[in-house]
Length: 428
Ligand SMILES: Cc1cc2nc3c(=O)[nH]c(=O)nc-3n(C[C@H](O)[C@H](O)[C@H](O)COP(=O)(O)OP(=O)(O)OC[C@H]3O[C@@H](n4cnc5c(N)ncnc54)[C@H](O)[C@@H]3O)c2cc1C
Image (cartoon, rainbow, N blue to C red):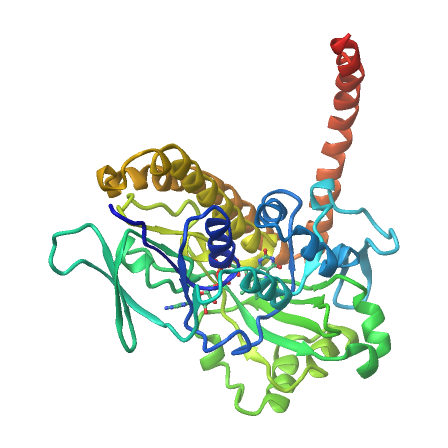
């Protein structure tokens, strides 16, 4: 292997984080993204980046200070309402039980800001826009273990490692496994209410600074304030996969579609909850939610791997998707860095085979499968709490129970800490 040619497919949080980490460790790579440019589409709602791996990934990327400058710690708070407006939880005013401590240290960041920060950190020219991957194929001569990337207009050849960070409908995954995402049982609409402070100040106050959930019986309005002054709301519920085609709502006319949607499904919800959708901009879209099986795995395939949603697509109900995606990128990058230091930098490159490069990749996959399975189970648990016949109460009961567990554990930890020999004593 005279040189090392790495492709990352997809410029989402996973692919960009991986590319940045590889490049800062002198492992050149190219990112191929299907969108025309960074402005091609709105990137969707904001994301909370957890204190653990996602923030650690940004530290390793050398972007943590930039992240802190745009992160909104005030956006961490949660409110839960019942459909009639009864408030069950308000972390902003300490009404009701707060969430367990594991939810602390998760500031919100707008997707666009996170993406721009990562894009701007890459080597000039190493992100190729307008490159929609159609297929990954093995070397047609059969003489090398390399891969070719087939795009709509041309083919790029000779890759030693292709990492699919191309999201839910990954093309790279098609070469690795026959498993495809399936419908999660949850569908509904995605709506954005711009400039809410001016459009409806009282509604803005009701949402608060972070997340505001209105949880009815298996029917919800899930709203989240974004940094650009809009509130994004998802009107999600348990319905069949083809609901948006069979429900009779005319999606080509958003103004009437919103009214039909609210009339059909939100009987018993107060005006505030309804207005989060009725007053939204006229570009609502149906959004069925898909997932890969919990515990999704594949047999390792030399020269290929997957990170982020491409590897373990989950519904967003535990709020972990982007965090797991960035953890994948961090983990794979650190393992490749170690391989580079211990193998690549120390030997004559022509003596190194592609199979040695696969050792860190295989190890990443083994660790990721375990990690992703745990997150996927947590996500399923939260899906059932969001969409419950008893509305928001089971979620509040779950938080209260978890807080109680924390309180039981805390005195034990405090006692252990008090008994532990202090460091300065040991030094003497
Ligand atoms: C409604 C909703 C709300 C969510 N809320 C949260 C949340 O609050 N917190 C959280 O942690 N997660 C949330 N998630 C999940 C989160 O968005 C994903 O887990 C995360 O974006 C995964 O990052 P990724 O880089 O793996 O994939 P993506 O973000 O999907 O990026 C994939 C990239 O690959 C590109 N691409 C796709 N196909 C090709 C191709 N053929 N060729 C070239 N490029 C291609 C795409 O254009 C895209 O840029 C939410 C998801 C949804 C749908």
